[in-house]
Length: 318
Ligand code: 5GP
Ligand code: MN
Image (tube, rainbow, N blue to C red; front, top):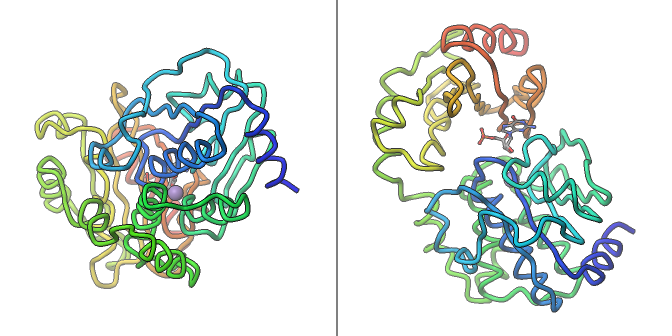
């Protein structure tokens, strides 16, 4: 049984490292810290390595312990959270590759199952929700600190309980966490209702450039590296920009592309869908992945080329 194996590996390991995907979102940062807290409750210490993340998540209990580099080159155990593919584990891949044992905990259905032990629930709305089930099985007490991390991952990945992947358990866990003192409204305000000034400036550009295409079913917009420089954008300041298009009446797919650092003709593509298009399948055509209603990939070319490449694939599924 995988969960028993995971517990055994944690108990056996003397050095543990926790890693997540590149440009980590709330679920990635919160899952990493949740594992750190849970491992501590099992009497072990885990290093969380996240080279760059949004300062929005600095309020999370334990965020001050996040490291940019490992304290050793070779860990006994490496745990990856919220990451579907070893390629996306940037900023810590080497620790994963050199670890004696590896574990993957995730909720992405397109998944390369790249660890020795893979615990993946493809219908969970957040990796943090997968972790709750796992911690309950281990008999770990979910206190206010751990609960704050877990709920932050759930709130960010469900857009505040609004996405269709949200389950009855999501609300049950949330109710239980409320009873344990977790401040739901404070988390909600910090991670969903507050935007940085740079994010606000970027959203103005995103709106001005937004095109409504394919009889109103698709929106397309972009930001460049130059835009990010001009507004002094920091890591995470592009989060949420892709949602702007999806919120327009009649739109099925919102496409937002963002120029990748230091690579002039490469764009990070984000897609969100409203009701029926499986954007994970569309992104898979370009080597990416994600979830049915939220997915991403990387595409080479300038803005116009990327737009045409993406539209060609989208037209097939609209
Ligand atoms: P976002 O658009 O917020 O960057 O990502 C949406 C979802 O797609 C997230 O679950 C994220 O992990 C996933 N995703 C984004 N980019 C990629 C990618 O290049 N490859 C894969 N496999 N998944 C991605
Ligand atoms: Mn996630």
